[in-house]
Length: 566
Image (cartoon, rainbow, N blue to C red; front, side, top):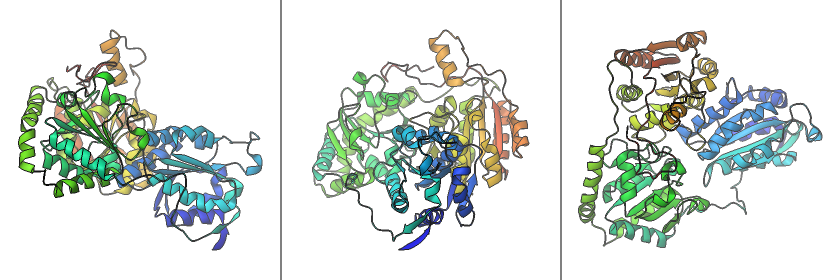
């Protein structure tokens, strides 16, 4: 054991956890910690808004699988990060957020820049702490990293009073963490595994329904092996895209509100639905009484509270997705009842039916001369990057077009706000991903509305050398809300017309970035090629068809089979 200043202990804990980069914004409550940080080998990236710091840490975490770290000051610094913390919480992203706090003697006295950030974030963190004893500083930080990454991941906040980080603390050797009240089960029960396997072998119309848990657990290879050896079609949630190769013949793409016709019909007509790391979100299920009405349901999830929460299941498996799928594949390897050719023959008529649905109603769009269709922009991005870029998105139509028309063959290549649907997520998340992978192509697909939520982070990208590319699908509308108004509110475009938008090309140049514009279809490919070849931040402004919609679309309150196709 050794004695050291609290600031030194914090830096040493971060180094002990392998933290090489963090994102933050300084202030009075954390000024001493920043003084210590600048003397360490940990890279600090200065954002232009605290929300951007947490989103960037989130993008770093999603793209790497590591715990992302953000450092915010007290009061408004901490509250500015709340939306981004909630974003990570909804999508189960492992983060540790360090916030400054007023000295302990002033807590509760309405001191300058004091807020109860622990109370504020209690509903949107996996856990949070106010460190009130100097001797608890180091154990709390270690526990925070353990909680963030284990079980179902999530953000953990540690609130640090100014006098705590300036005091002398004990730094003890690290030991394995054991918590009486937190012991997530990761290993699948053998009996449940056998039940699931036998159900798979009996089913004639099985579908794998894959969520973000497959990506978080690193189970994509095990999932792909299972799908191919049993000839089972695979559909993915928005968060699950990349968990199974999007170009594989068994891939149905995304399901749900803006899912493919084949995906939604397959789920509706299936006799066995195998849910892996998914939570039966309302955007997936549509009207609950019409969701997979003929199917027996297997549900694999590490979070027992997700089992039968929205949809009752027949065979629950509470376990880490990777370990559960490994166990299922191992059972099949040893079972005398499993014959791959017989199973493929059993499922062949079903696979043919699925292909017929795909052929009848593929994901497509109508060309319109030289007017730029947003789907064409996404297809061109996919072609020119070989499908190998890291794609972040904002939220709205841009997000859905990216999910539909960019085929993700690998996990951790789509970074998007799924559960909370946070506009302004894409640009700072792209900075986080580019920081982790400086040589990768990182592209933020944005709308002209959502990009303005955190457009100040262009300065961050320029300053830290994150050469992200931003593709703005510009229709001078808040596009998704406008689409609903068109379909269900008699084209009453209430507060969705954006008559005044920046000259994004000029704005990019003002930040020292490169601005490019395409107004015709013929200009799309040259603009993207130039952007990808440019060693700088690039803003691409695509003037798209103003009233283009995202289809298929399931109206609110409808079954997923009641899709609007055009």
